[in-house]
Image (tube, rainbow, N blue to C red):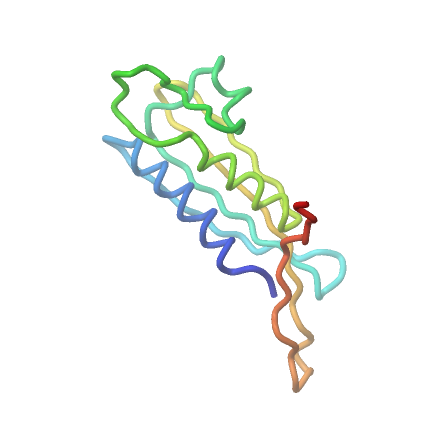
Length: 140
């Protein structure tokens, strides 16, 4: 049980970024199910591995910050606001998960995130409606 809409949003953002920045080579997606110590607690790990342009080491430290782009020049090839990775990172955190990446300039990147979820007991005849992971916040 979890927030499938936000989960899908993060996956689609990371995959579309990988495709956008991979002119040649490949984009691979792997999905792993990780079982916790309690049978009802598991997590899903998604990895998106590409052979794209990679991210320079100097830009990696601030990549998950809002409005940050690796190429901020006016002549850059790829457009966007620089919010996709930040929003994905925040959504993963709100779902109780973690997100990280490794990258080597000219060799590609690997973005991964792990999100916990609860599996209802198999013997339960009436499974309650899925609970959202996102925490409610007071915006006043």
